[in-house]
Length: 211
Image (cartoon, rainbow, N blue to C red; front, side, top):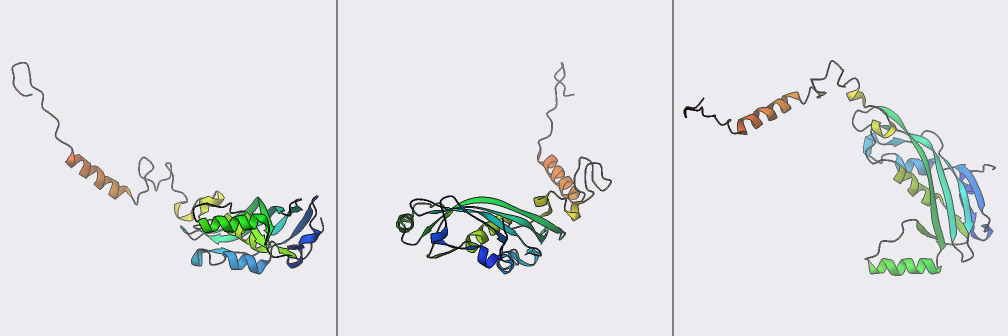
């Protein structure tokens, strides 16, 4: 599949999309990816430092809908919101989308249901204005949904730097695998629980004397 510039490859002529499929492959626009993700969670957000690849196939149905089987693949850098470590989040999505031109019957049904206010519509139904179909905005939404709002090390299978080395066997851990920073609070909790407990009942001997 030949690669073409993203600005061109992610825009299609509606009339040229065929039932057998129209494949595409291009770098997702870097400026759009950065606008979508950088600053997403403040200063601990995401940094798009390398291209994210967009690929897939568009199909046009006999009733005029466009079905898009789309993939995004790449990675973005982030700072863990817990420890500040720099990590890379893999981006690898595959989704199907239904896209219809304005004025299509499906678009009119969507408008009617929206007015009712009590029906949740399929979020993967989109509209566009012919003759051109640009799928950048749709893939931008998919990219945002792939990125956690509070990215942490465990999102990529890593241990936070602030907790590195703390385990049941680590010398910095209190008995039972308790983080030593919480040990004083746990001891206070146990002491309060002991004070609140009723004293044990005394047992009486055979002669009626308490033992």
